[in-house]
Length: 230
Length: 161
Image (spheres, rainbow over the protein chains, first blue to last red):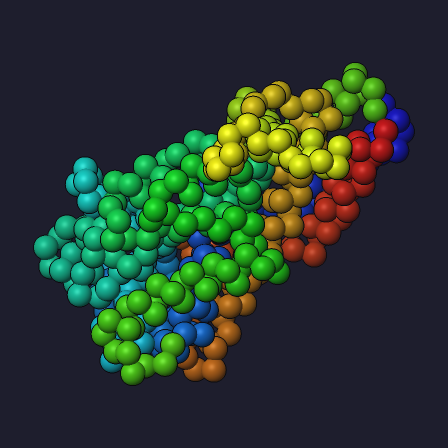
């Protein structure tokens, strides 16, 4: 091996040893990316004229956010999980949850959502009945995937199957930092699945994703309070 | 770069990843290598169009009025250089895109947006027992620039040789 390449590899090893980075598992990467997607939802809501509160399961407002490290349920007895409450004019409030389950429309089985936007009355019903909300009662589901290389086709297939099961009333958004031509083709075949690849800070895809969210908010606001300017 | 030299770089990079907490990156790259590289196949329509371009004649269409066929892929194995570049690019994604996404989330949630959102103090993920498993916070981010510079230089070396 050439000396400069040997030196580069040695230097890389030394530098990596000195930074003690936290990115030591796919799970950590996905959690960071979910927090990023959550922040984009909040930013899109604020730009569309919403006011935002962060709330715990017991209704107490908080400023320190604690999300579920493992998939959970909206009706969890644990009060500490945080979600956002969005208010657009006089339209019923929306809730934004991270890592909760919803019930599929066709199979009636519970499936995890990385980020879920759901009407508050549906979330309240879920808490009252101790049952996850049905997919048809949700506004949008966002699947977040941080991947270090091109997305494998299996991810596209899984997401397309989930969207198919959840039914046509709910839109599924697949956001990732990466691209995947075959995954894209697979997702695009589902009428209620939308993907926005390459969504990382500083790219145009962030703006496109936020426009998609704005459209979802607009549908909700238009239905309940079309006097509110989005 | 000669094949044996390239294999040595690849092996060394994999060893570094394993020692420095990036085994998951190697796994994801290996999954992609197993899947293979998808190459877009030229459809009948594109072939006839290229014939038109070359010969300066009206393009031949085997089935007039027929819609061009959708994209088709063929799968080929990644060549050695591409395999090594996949790993380097994957490491670059981890040390460029992941810190950028984290910084953006922290900045965006922490700024309050003119009173329209509360100013978030901290963001974390916890397990069912309440133990914090991941805290979204800044760390020694400035140091990643040295790692990124090394990986970028290595990428150039692999391509050029």
